[in-house]
Each structure stands twice: as C-alpha cells, then as structure tokens.
Image (cartoon, rainbow, N blue to C red; front, side, top):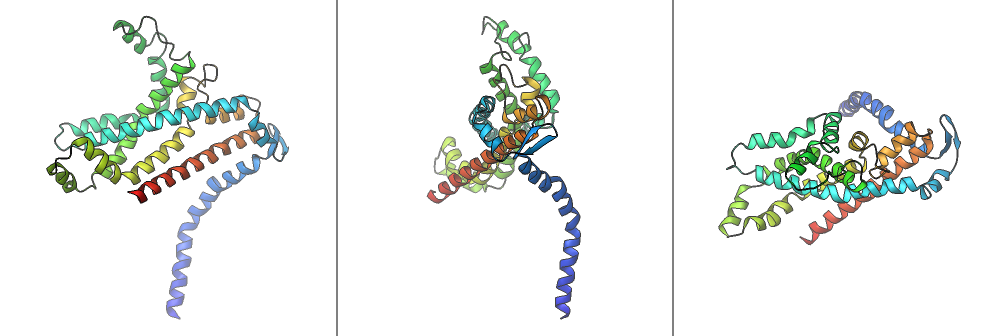
Length: 296
C-alpha cells in the first residue's frame, strides 16, 4: 500500500515538473499547427474569411506560380542536397586524419559560415555576384570570360548563386555530425583494411559510408527539410527573381501572406504542401535506408 502511494506520488511529481513545458508546447506549437490546418479550409481576403471547403485545394492545381515555386524548390533539393552531403562527408574524412596539421584551424574555417548572420552573408553573396562584383571582375581579369555573367539577372545563373550560397553555409554544419560519428569508429577496422591492402577509396565506400549510414540518413532528412523550407537566401539575394526563376514555396507563402493581397487561408494550404512533401520524402529515405541495411 505504501509502495502504491509512493508510485502515485512520483507520478504526480513527474507530471508537475513537465506540465509547464507541455503547456508552452501546446500553446506555441500544437495550437498553431491545428490553427493553420483549420485556416487551410478558409477562403477570403485579409481577416474577412469563411469556410470554403476544398476550394483552396482546387486552387492549388490551377496556380501556375505555385507550380513554378515547387519546381524551383525541387531543383534546389535535387542538386544542392547531394552535393552538400558528399562535400561534408569528404571534408569530415579528410579532417579526421590524425596526421593532418592544423586540423582545428580547417575545421573552424569550414564551420564558421554556420554562425554568420543570414542577412550578412546573403548581402555578401549578392554583392559578390552582382554584375560588377568581385566574381565577375576576377573572371574577367583571368580572361576566363569575355563579358560579365548575369548571375542575378538570369534564372539559370541565379539558381547557381542560391545553390552556392546554401552549400557554403551548411556544408560545415553537416561535417560536424560526420566528424563526431567518425570518432566512434574503431580505428582497428581501418588498420586491418590497410594490412589487407584495401586502397583508401575502397575503405571509404566499404567501411566509412556503411558505418555512417544512420548519421547520413539524419543529415539528409534535415537537409531535405531545410531546403524545402528555403526562404532567407532567396529573399535576401534574388527576392525570388528574376522572373520568379528562384521563387521557392516558403517565399511564395510569405508573399501570399504579406506582399500580395493577404490570403491567409490559401497561404496556410500552400504551407501544408511543404508538410506533405517533407513527410513523403522522409518516408522514402527511411525505406531506402532500411532496405539497404537488410541487403547488407
């Protein structure tokens, strides 16, 4: 009986400790999610909205700007995420070598972009890749190009600038995860592989990559979410231009809410498009990783 009262008291105390956090979680996370789901079925302008059923979902299929924003976002995801993940993995392996001098300096240099202000580095990239910026001036001085490249005024080159900026900022962030995971791999495995005469490239693909699969899956999913929610770089460097050539889903949601005629219901519907895409891609990545683990 006494034990039962003690267990009950511990449960009450436990709930008392976590209740403030649960309340804050409900107010600032769960409630906004439910509210946005409810708003996705509302139609109207500004604060004058009413229930519209599936009208917003039907509008999605006929929204040419939404399709372009979705296309641009997918292009950024398909091109940038694999490049960033591979670069981060290669840098992590190189900087994990105990014989490399100044490892700490190189690690710091690669990680520093992650702590730089988004506004500051976006403004820097916009200045560097302007028509008379340092990039064009350097390429012209080296006679690599004959005329300045329209980095910010051509849709193709504008996408390249966005991809370069994201890769520059977040590669070091992912590299830290790989470095931490590499520290937990028994060095005797690599020593045995060297004794057996396995070359460095084969050790990378046969030992390093398989043992880092959980971390690679984690960074891939996080990078996928970040890329599909891409907003700051596009908003600060190209504002979605030229000709909506770099418009992303998040920037389109922002424009629907604050720049165009306010349509809170439709912008909430578009935001749930991102949720669905992220969920589907995450499930696919989990399934692929699980199937590869079974086959291996």
